[in-house]
Length: 88
Image (cartoon, rainbow, N blue to C red; front, side):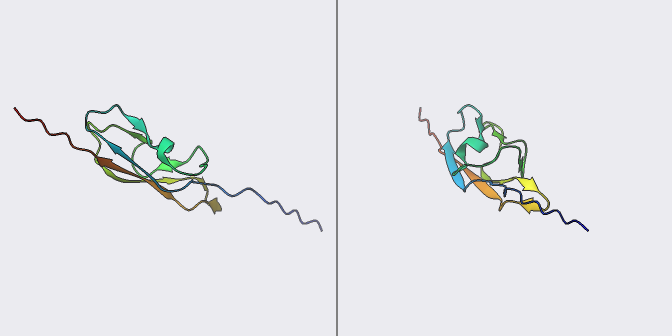
């Protein structure tokens, strides 16, 4: 009888991050705002990780990476707006 044991590297979703945008800023890739060294190929709680401040709602977006048997702890990019006020 043989027994094969395989050890796989744990997935890494990085560390929580944040970004503050103006509502007229260009879209950003939320992956760029995760801290640490996150693995690529994960999924976002909403959308595909692209955030357009002109149409998307600010808040927490959760990134998860890994297989069912070896998932990393999900991490978040928090998005907030910096409002501009115009007076005439």
